[in-house]
View (cartoon, rainbow, N blue to C red):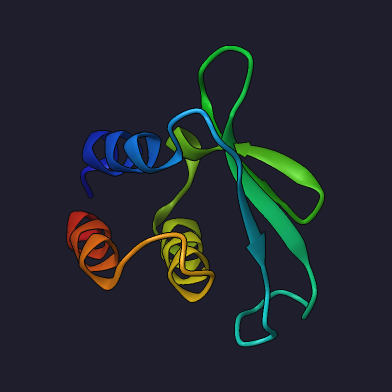
Length: 90
């Protein structure tokens, strides 16, 4: 897994904005569960999920997979970006 490339790619997608993430119930999180992907005051990429903040650089393979799926289903990334990110997990 190439975490550096994953984090760099996600940082370039987020830039200085907040990406809102909503569940449609198709994933192992409750339908309507809201989250976000953003940079904190220290410039670290954070995934707000289950009401908690997780540093993206500390996510494991399964958490990255879920995040990528959610970003794609929320149209925050293209299928091309999704494929690139999934390829970095191998």
